[in-house]
Image 1 (cartoon, rainbow, N blue to C red):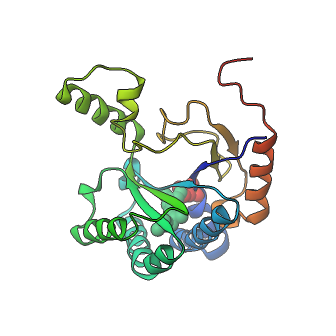
Image 2: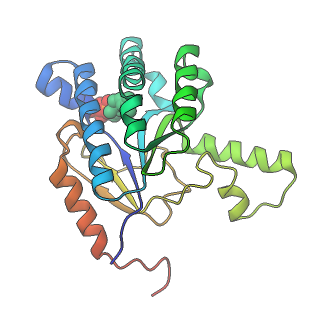
Length: 225
Ligand code: FPP
């Protein structure tokens, strides 16, 4: 039986949920953050060691300014209000993505939060922020060229933001959309993918548990028979 170590999630559907239930996309994001907090706890409960959440993509900058500002304010308050709790629960925070485009204050707080939780071992919470897989791969190739080392799978692995992190066993995408949206394209090569119809704010413990149980029963061949 497989036990998943790393779960990656594309948390899609906040906007639609918000319009449908609160007449506001931003209130959908606010509700989505509650699901984030639940899923972190449930990941620990299910002995998941790495949880990667796609919180802001390189493409999300195209959204209206008030939505971008709101998402950044949610991130800021999450860092401010939750970092001690994460730390006390043994959670290590790691950011993947290009942080330079974020306001200086957020960059500093993200660095502080990573430093504070660096030694924690219970769960590694990886937040993908201003993350795009193609740009991650281009950066990796540039790094390899700069170091003048040979190009092989190992050197690419070691040049990605996710260096040292095992590839996701499971990818979940909520929001009734079946695509990868420039997320971990290299790292998801052999992941089991679960597309869920529900919007992210409605994703619950039973949905998560069902996916983990289904995963446990899958025969994973990795190209073998
Ligand atoms: C996709 O839904 C979701 C996002 C772009 C943002 C995800 C953010 C959160 C869950 C809250 C903040 C999280 C942290 C960790 C601080 P969408 O807006 O594309 O939904 P739609 O497809 O219905 O428009």
